[in-house]
Length: 201
Image (tube, one colour):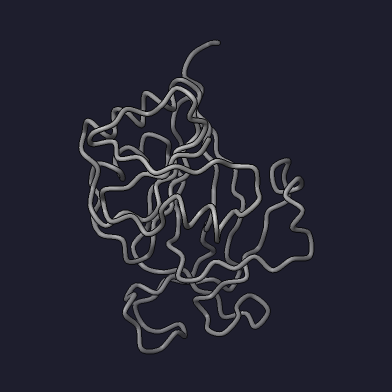
């Protein structure tokens, strides 16, 4: 059971996930607003999908309590997402921070259309090996780079990155998608999993 947060200008709702993003994947998607509702006991996953405005401290507390019960959250943040102070502070507890700018790659085999529509480099690990995406192009258009920071009781698994020719365009309202003055040449994380051990059990 996947619950899609709404009420903060999120990009996608439950209908989007049901019909377009994960059709026939075995998930039941429902919308939920944490400003007036509690997370149901039958929830397995909460989806935070590129909100335009920040969540309140009370909403963040509900999300945190859900994860401490063993629930999973999926957080999607766009390159042009605003300053979501409370959400970003909560993600920092998981050792995750979102960089400013947009990820790019100028190796010809690592993008399609333009250099910000990245054909991701998929890291081989126990998670990606079960996804059935071997020899498939997985696109990350207009992606925001992710930085990982060490935190006690938190472990990270990187799923996808740019290539060695990756860079970060600092001005997301670019007129030229190539590497230009002010951009940062680096390999960027595009998708990661963070796991937190809440107790000795």
